[in-house]
Structures are given as C-alpha cells and as structure tokens.
Length: 121
Image (cartoon, rainbow, N blue to C red; front, side, top):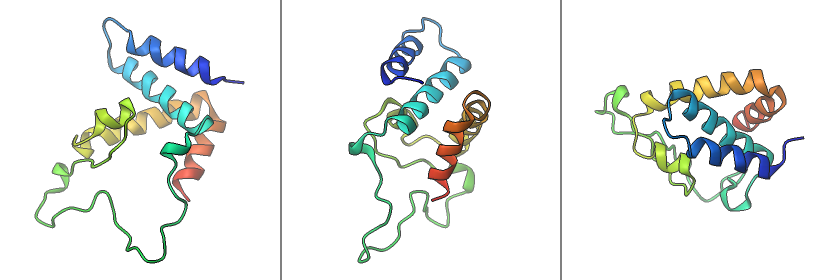
C-alpha cells in the first residue's frame, strides 16, 4: 500500500530534479493526483452539493466573445499544481492532464477508477 510519506518523497525527488523535462512534470502531476485521491485534505475538499440558495457557477464560463483557444483556467489553490495552472490556457493544460490520467490508468487502475468516480459525481 502506498503511504503518504512515500508520495511526499517522490514529489520532493521530482521537484529536486536538476534538469526537469515533460516526464518529470507528468510524474510530479501523477504523484500529486495520487496524494490528493488517497489522502484527501479536508482543507481542499469540495462540497458534494452547492447550497440550495446559490446559483451554479462554472469555472470555465467566459465572455461569448472569447475564442475557445483563449480560455484560461481560473483555479485558486495553494498546491504547487494549482499555482502552476492558474491563468494558463486550458488548451495547454488539458492534453497534459489527459496524458497523466492515461499513465495513472496503466500504473494504478484503482486510483484511476477512484479519480474517475470523483469526476463523474
């Protein structure tokens, strides 16, 4: 069983890489996802339902004049990943997330399934 300190160590190793490349980023993202799914932090938990008196708001809602390729990600988080993607073009981030999820599906089908259940809620 993966322990939280194992993931912390793997994250630290990726972040200490002297010459990071795309695979370093993919491994780092996979470690962060694993940690998020296996060891959820109450501070970062999303409510399962919005309060009845609030309207539904979408984080990718944009001005109708904005071309689809220029949609940026508005995500506030204190995690390294959250900080890294903030205000980046969504078209740049989604292919990376898709590749990370494909790797996760191969390396850890159970964690992949848990993440997909979480997404599909």
